[in-house]
Image (cartoon, rainbow, N blue to C red; front, side):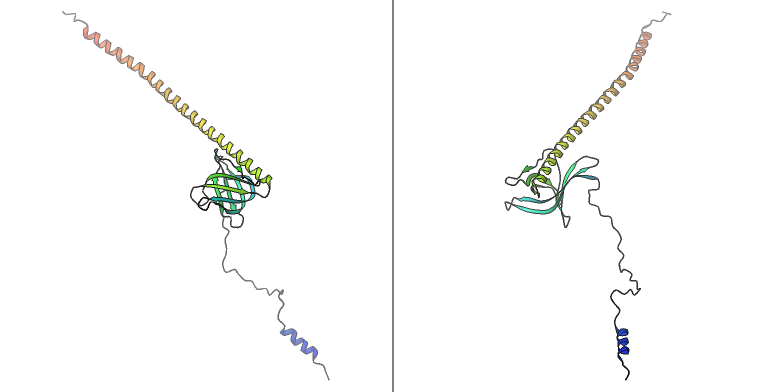
Length: 218
């Protein structure tokens, strides 16, 4: 009696589904074509002079307590043209802005009492889209990073003071130059008018003399 096992096995092979890794050669076009979009961070015209991981807090006056603003990267960004420096911090996951304010000559960062890894400072912040007076506290992973931040804060504040003094000096110099130019123009105008006035006076004198000269026929 002949065996039917090979025939049965062949039938199972034909009915077996194709393997998952088998290439069918079919091409599926995407339903929606996504185009690359340039995203602006607002930092394209600035250079980062400090970049550190940290956690930021703000003091809630109503609740009389510190509230966390977020954990992420704090930066000092210097504008390539104006030279102004601002402090910007974004949350690491959402990139939401936690702090955004200029570093002014009158500002300074002080070590937070009882914690050498933290420091505090006052600022007029614009992170929420409107200017607010805030008291910030920032905490770093190490004492070294905190010291680096405070030293850079102080250095930036002093550099902004120098910029303000230079601007005042430049403005004063421009004002003096303008004043000198105006005085020079006034002097030149006076010199130009002097010969004309002298000539008019001389002409008037001659006319007066002609009127006073007697008639020879008398």
